[in-house]
Length: 263
Image (cartoon, rainbow, N blue to C red; front, side, top):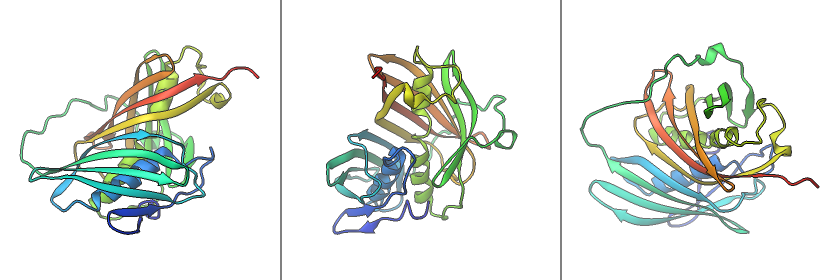
């Protein structure tokens, strides 16, 4: 994860990031979101910290090629700072991200989402590992359609709060598409079925709201629900809760899910 969050400076407000290889042959979308957020934050002075990001996935990224992040300083305010980042490869833009940063303000602290008898990570078995992280599935249901996972990084992250926010952004692309797929009428009850043989899926746009400080190298619960589909587009909404029960972030993602036609 340290390598993923390390960007090389390539001129004014321009950075370059690398990607490991992933089993599906494209750059993991959460990586591009995390690196774009890191690039944006490097142009923001403390005490402003990220409170939200909105991203559009444009093209699948090639992991064999570096990604160039170009930052536009849209606004420097007393309370809020706004940045826009375009991630590019040789084939063109692959992601467009806007991020907003806020100066700390005192105010009420109110939380609604709760853990409510969710099994702890040590009560479950690891079901998937990709570079830098592992996941343990809590539930994958069709009625109502949802996907719950505990996720964590396999190695410690630095003490820098910015790295933990970017690492959380990386994780937020973990299971939104799973929740959308759970609501598809042609989805099988057994999530271990090779769904890639049946569906073609891609994330379209992604939003994260950061509510509380997070320790991203500890277990985090991603509780994602499908809000339905229209045509081939589905929408998932959910939250991120840490092992202490704190609601640290909220996620929304729209995804494309098409049933493959028989050859």
